[in-house]
Amino acid sequence: QVQLVESGGGLVEAGGSLRLSCAASGGTFSNHGMGWFRQAPGKEREFVAAVSRFAGSTYYADFVKGRFTISRNNAENTVYLQMNSLKAEDTAVYYCSARWAAGVSVRTQDYDYWGQGTQVTVSS
Image (cartoon, rainbow, N blue to C red; front, side, top):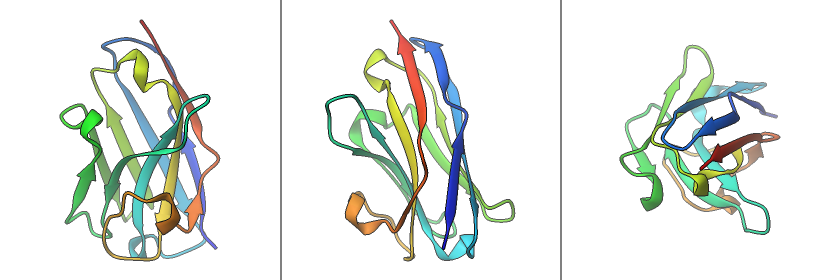
């Protein structure tokens, strides 16, 4: 079983930056592809970014390309999401996820483990 704990959320003004972290435990971190998703009130959970096992591949939702960067440190069992140029519409709960597979995926059903989420609020 893999446990995921997100941190780094908070309140930021539009145009600002936040860095989310997700610490993994209970499994071999480098065996898992990792993803970030988000869910705003009244909306479905949506894909944000993903990174493959050894960071050879990354993939982003169109609405975050050029603003967000996903990275991982397998030695520290941690995946990050650097978010720059934040907009009010980025306000959501952000979830870290892990899948027992090498590559990236944009589908929630492809992920086996989820964190509890961290709130990101962007004021306009």
